[in-house]
Length: 171
Image (spheres, rainbow, N blue to C red):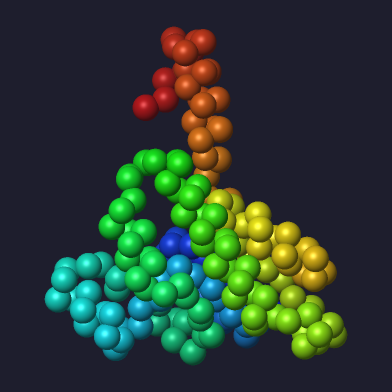
């Protein structure tokens, strides 16, 4: 059976992919930017400060092995983000990928990895490039979860709309 490793920056789809893999018994590990168990000190502090970290956990994954960035990093990211800023999103995705590669290197040292157990790596599009390169170098299967087409698609749509405003009504 293939062992799955998932990377999930954010709480997208309420962790649907890791939850499904866990139900099938093939989820090995989840890496994410923030994971806040309901009984943690962070969850208690969040309730006092009205910070919404409750959605950074799912009870279906209570027995899963989860590694997350230090919460101070995620808190900083959440409080300094400019909504809609692609430049900020790209910088944060690169930081997350850098952290993730370091964690993968620690957790999956090549000589210790059992080659008889096949692995697959799942990640969402914007934070997948470097982890996919890492997984490819180890012979792992890779599965990309596409969120949306991003800024390039937005540019194409704007150009189409400008060139044929009567034919295209996108709002």
